Image 1 (cartoon, rainbow, N blue to C red):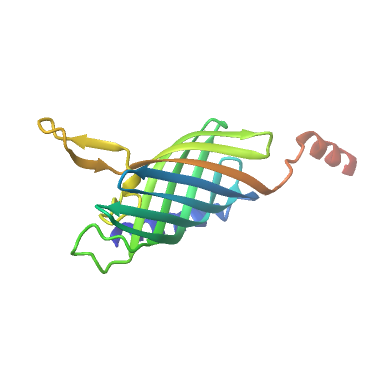
Image 2: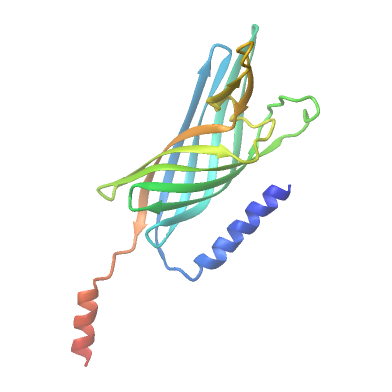
Amino acid sequence: MQRILIVYILFCSFQHRSNAQEITGSEIGFDGFASVTNLGGSFGIGMKYGLNFGENIIAGPSFRFQRSWSNWFGNKFAYNITGGGLFLHARYQNIVYGAVEFEMLHSPISYTVLNANKRWVPTLFVGGGFSKEFNEMVRLNLGVYYDVINHENSPFRQGYFVKVKDAQTGQVVKYVPIIYRISFFFPLSRKEKENPEEEEYDEYIEE
């Protein structure tokens, strides 16, 4: 709960600061996630609606849908996961980006008996990676994210790809909460940049 409160305070602080900045446009983004094993798998899609604050900052709400299935020793079942949250991306030189993405997900997954009745699962991914805009029509993000909260019932556990093995037995003893995401952002609106030379000419005419 304390971590969720911290995230809320951080986003409120950013919103307060961003009010002093000019909104230069908006974008819609989609990211994909997939993981398949012999015992099951999952795939999901996330949607983001972001406002551009200047040229380097984009922030806004996010929504997610995920479908997971399992085949544990012949016991087959499938379920849906839905939820939403907030995100903040900072871009630099049309090369790299950093990201903070918080979501609350409604999930029936329970890896522990103690939390069997717990339905809402928080995630807080911090990461970044490669970011490139092509012809002002689409932006590609290739990122790696670390889940700071690492909730024991996180639906992303099947996608953790960093494993810690026991040196003697070779068995996996821990999964590090790191995932990858591929995202595409499409501009919905964009304010045209003002031409400094035209402004100077207009001021000269007025004089």
